[in-house]
Image (cartoon, rainbow, N blue to C red; front, side):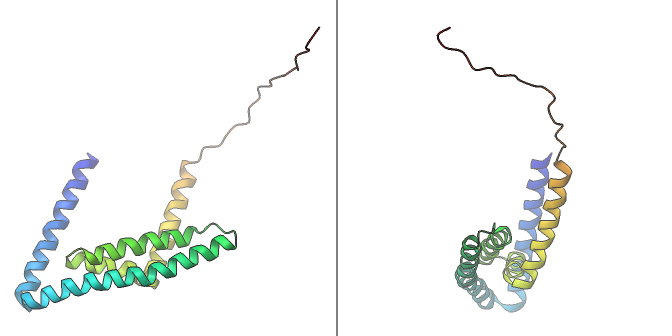
Length: 144
């Protein structure tokens, strides 16, 4: 069932992207649409480089302070995903990629994700009952 939902979602997304590309090309012209597509790909690669280096430096700083870089790793994942979405041709993917690369929206999404993951992990934790079984181990006496 999940496979079918994912397949249907990807199909709908693809059809929306193609429809938007055709409509925008019809309104602004092929040259402008090609310029937008190439520009967003170049911009995505540039932003990946700039934001990626900043993210790596933040991760390094956290590790030097012996702090688990959870937020920084989530940021890096969103930066990579956002840049890849800009490189891929499409208007919806460009909009989503930009949202993931803009720091304030990325920070807000990161906090929502952390809250959701916190609720998920809290709901999946099961209390562990202490074991009442006692195992008595006696050392063997060699050479009796």
